[in-house]
Length: 220
Image (tube, rainbow, N blue to C red; front, top):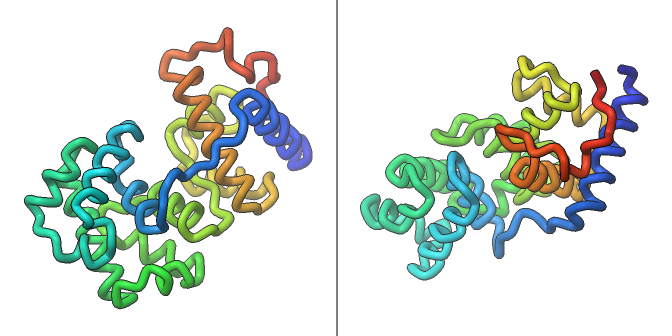
């Protein structure tokens, strides 16, 4: 498939999803720190459970860099319990906060001003932050035009013939970013629409009949 054809295909896919699901306004958060903590917590769990854990942190007055730095591990684990894997995720959050204070004096604004490539490299060196989490932070908190590739993205693109299912994260991301305008709002809306499609229709066992993409020809 040519560059032009794939660009047109992705545009058609996006338009179908937006018409069906509407504006998503994702990522739901009151601050950049909340976005970052949410990105860490959402690993291997449903968003509704992340919301419960974040609500616990807010209720405890701990959703600040200094609050998360000072809270003891057991208290943090208890507050994060609804998000699952709470011991591991508490460790990951502490690792991020240690990085934030060690490299930026606890100033999240300074962190988010860093060059995209440099910041991504540093984030990936923090325990518990993989490519999807790092890119979620860059896109939603840093407002950088970086496409987030999650399991829904891989499944949907594979079923529609855009990828063969063997590509690595970076290969998929590069292909999408080559064929889409580099726009923060577009990337965030597209990612959110893909998540909605994955949750509602393109599950492990596909529910194709009511899917808004059912009559969109695959690229195969």
